[in-house]
Length: 310
Image (cartoon, rainbow, N blue to C red):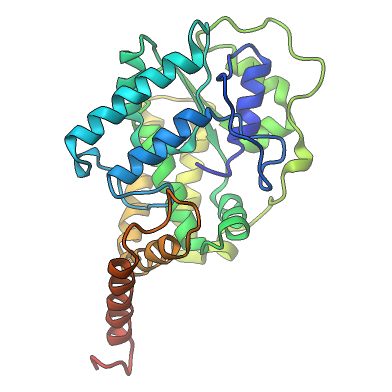
């Protein structure tokens, strides 16, 4: 998920011997050390989401079927070419983009077409910290950010179960990056035998920590998100069928609760699209989406005690 320490983790992977892409996305105000993302792939991922009527902050499941088939196939071809161009003869490419959580089965197909096999390093940060970070950066409500975190983490975990993988807890990486490095070296790859001399992880960049879910999200959804985080966290120690079943049960509880937020989450999604400045995120039809948002407000008004429907 975005804001989960994925940039710091990718930098650590690179320091241990993984190969970064030829072209990196430039640093930004929210990530002054850099994102360590392949800029060409990120642009194509944005286009892929957009073709399916989605965007990175969409809490709905991603469906490639929503994109015109000829557009989808063309984008897949471009992605295969981009992987080959960005990594050419790299022995151990590291490809980082949180958007891939939304369509990892498709990206595995793209890697296969590019002649690559995948292993996974899954970054895990507490949803209360992620939500607080997104509130600052994107003015996103806590509940929406929590559900967005859940969607990303549920999909990423579910769709990578049959691959070599590890889960890295954000707090563990900051407290003991050498211990995290040792775990990373258990994955396939020509890793460096020695750790870098200079610490590649900077704990000072962590701005939100020791947060309570009940304070950030409220008790109803906060309790469920805490449970999902706890089950995902246990995978960092023992990643087996029993642990994955616990994740499934916790995920079902979160998504069942999310159904009760469907009206407000749809309203917030449209709000973010209508107010976005980034061309890949903004609404492609403001009049349509503005009318849809007004209709949702009307539904909300009629559902309130004393509203027009009472």
